Image (cartoon, rainbow, N blue to C red; front, side, top):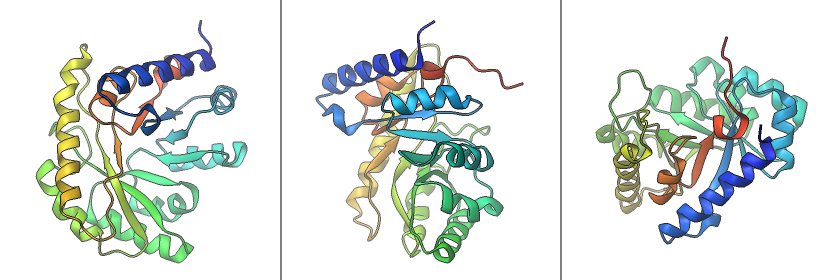
Length: 231
C-alpha cells in the first residue's frame, strides 16, 4: 500500500502535468487534503509532506483536529454549515467554501464582526442542479454575491462546486467549464470587495480535468488517504 506521502507526491506530479497541458502555471493550484474521518497520524504525515490546506466537513471535527495539530497550514471548512455553528467557524477556519444562501452569509458576517475578524468565503454553486446537493444555482449566484458584497466582515474570494460523480472524469468537464465561465462573468462586474481569485473544484476522481479547466484548489480525500469507512 502506498503511503500518504507517496500519494501526495503523485498527485502533485499529476497537477503539474495537467496545468502544463492547459498552459497554466502549476503554482496556481493548491492541494487540499480532505480529512473527514481520517486519523490524526495520517493527517500529520500529510502535513509533514507539505500539504497546502486541510479541508474539514464538520465544525466540531475540525475544532478537535485544529486543537490537536495546530494551525501550521490553512484549515478550510468545505461541508454544509448551519447558522448556529457560524460563531465557531469564524474563529477556527481560514476560509469557508460552502456559502450558498443570504441567511448564512449574514450570520457569518455578524459572527466575524463579533470576533473582530474578516472571513474569506467561497460561494457554493450547484452547477448540475442536482437536488441532493447544496449550492446556489448558476443563475442566482451573481445576485447573491452582489448582496454579500455589502457585508463588512466577510469577503467573497471565488466559487466552489461539486459536479456529479462519473466513471469517466471527462464527463465532469462541462461542469468545471460552467463554473470557470461564471467566475469570469462575475469578475467582469467589478463588484467592490469581491474577488474571483479561487475556483475550488475537482476531487480524487476528476482533479486532473478540473486543473485543466482552471481549478485553483483541488479537494482530495481518497487519493491521498485511501478508502475510508463511514460507519
